[in-house]
Image (cartoon, rainbow, N blue to C red; front, side, top):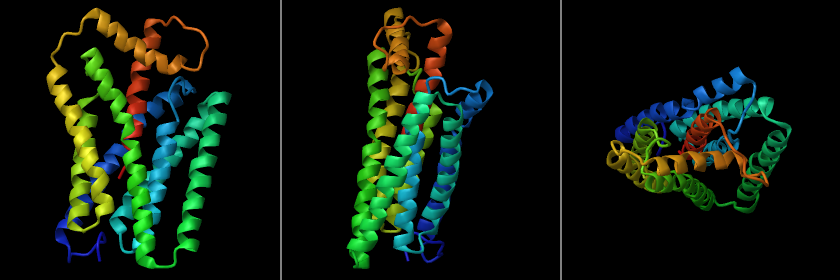
Length: 271
């Protein structure tokens, strides 16, 4: 048995428990964002995509764990992920504008209902061999997890361009890197390459983020670059408008928080 609660694999068990603890904290990281949404009764410029994608990821890994059997440590953390991401998504739907609500609902129907149902039906109906079924589903999970790593590229590029780590909190980068290391170790000890492989990339991106933080944390940013960094965040909010909008200082500050939350949500969408 690999990935279960068996003491026959003590290292896998230990890393699985530690991975659950670290991932639990990562899942709770957006709580300040949603407290803000609840307090203001508005989602402002926050994006729903990271939470819808994180919910889909958790659903996919639960299905993988059920097919694999006895992978209880994967089921526990991803079950919690499904619950917390569902709450985040429902709160977003409750307080979002009509346009954002419709967009979010379409994403849920396409990704969490349509694509997830298609994957489940194809795996169960088209593949009868248990070993082959697990392999196909495992590579689907790997492919999706790797695709999620596109998100950190934007924040890394922004840090290099602005020479500012303002939009890249060190604590978040540290815990995401730690999570990747722990889950890679879990996959290695339990001989589960589908869990281990995507977390190699996760560790690489996390290490790059922390290295950039060390390089630029004491750098004094020229005002021209500082302004550029602020405007790049505001562009996320006004991207759908046909004209350029002038923003106040309050909007810029709000954009900073939104940028952090959206990058954070996207990054945590992996095991």
